[in-house]
Figure 1 (tube, rainbow, N blue to C red):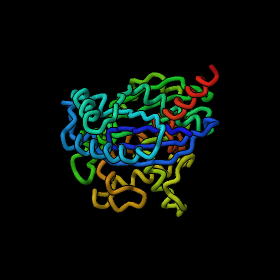
Figure 2 (cartoon, one colour; figure 1 turned 180 degrees about the horizontal axis):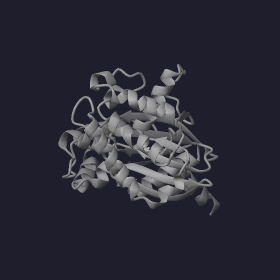
Figure 3 (tube, rainbow, N blue to C red; figure 1 turned 90 degrees about the horizontal axis):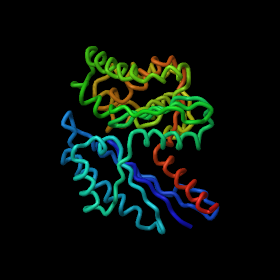
Figure 4 (cartoon, rainbow, N blue to C red; figure 1 turned 45 degrees about the vertical axis):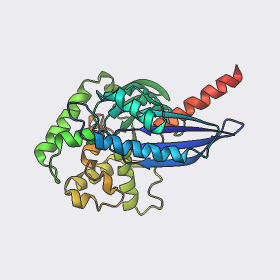
Length: 312
């Protein structure tokens, strides 16, 4: 019996998953932890990780370090995404994490992040043709899937945290702020030529902000276990209705929305605007939600490599 683990060090949250791998190379998840570290907070145009965010992140990684101790032998990967890869003080941050936690961080490209998202989705959902969209804290990954194959992928340097910091200045979003936010993201989409191939395809939605849509809707429908959203489907009409409702609320009111975590209420408008904009952009009538993304993609990469090693 062996163990494989992944720490996803994102711009908004840090997440740890550990799987027990049996003799037949079958995984069983035994640990799943999350900490909202908001690593990209305050980076701004200078693209500098700030001390409060670094301290929060290292504290979370130390907690994760304690959580992994009972599992051996363990293969652990620490994969850092947008906040770390875009930071001018990236090397100093990675070195500090290693010194204070003993964890070796691998900074992955946006394209690799999109590939891992694809692997996490295609191995756990019966999709054929779709646009995978992962809206994180500091980036948004897009992956076009045709006949279950990854055809195109791209990473955009905008997500829930940096879009909120750049465009939303008050507790209640103004029409001008929303217009500028939506226009900026649409302009980015105009530069992706292959998105025309995604016309009318379903969107497979990943990322904390996107998953919040499903959690809110499941609460509204009175479904049990509203956190269990893997494979859940939602119409564009329902998604637009939730977005419109949230737009009409101030921060205090957003914190009281069932299914929306209080710690995400300040960035939810910036976090949801990309997927709502994409629904219109590709004339999509439905969303399919995935709980699995980067960490599960890394798991399946590891399992496939293990099987190949055995075959050799």
